[in-house]
Amino acid sequence: MKLVIHDLKNIAINNDQNTKIVSDNGTIKPCINCYGCWIRTPGQCVIHDGYDNIGLLFSKCEHLIIASQCFYGGYSPFIQNVFNRSIPYLLPYFEKRNGETHHKKRYGNNIILTAYFYGKISAKEKETAGKLVAANGINLSARKVEIHFLDKPEDLKEII
Image (tube, rainbow, N blue to C red; front, top):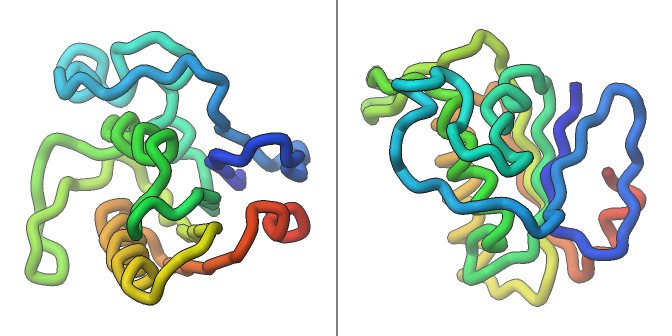
């Protein structure tokens, strides 16, 4: 499955039977760092707002596509909130990868992570975004990581 997470307004995304789309419908609540997704309901967020299945969606995807306005080299608030709510995708246990400590994977899939940032983006913001997406790739044990920068969100219509 292809999982597309985006913050686009008034832009239709190609949605076929092998694509799941997560967008901002105004109901997402922030992660409260209760770790209930690891202890009380392993793999499932305890906040029931329609975004409680993000970890499960990550577990079923082969290709994770992020489309976000660039905010100082980072994701938009909505996209960052979705990433925060994806904690159930990982286990609370640690392992060493590339000389760094990371959470172990809960599921066996190996995703491709592709991030698209749009907006007026400076060279420094591109550098920061590149480091962020690379770090996300390591945390998610992605087998491949790509990052692209676009001037305007409309350019994404033909890509995703």
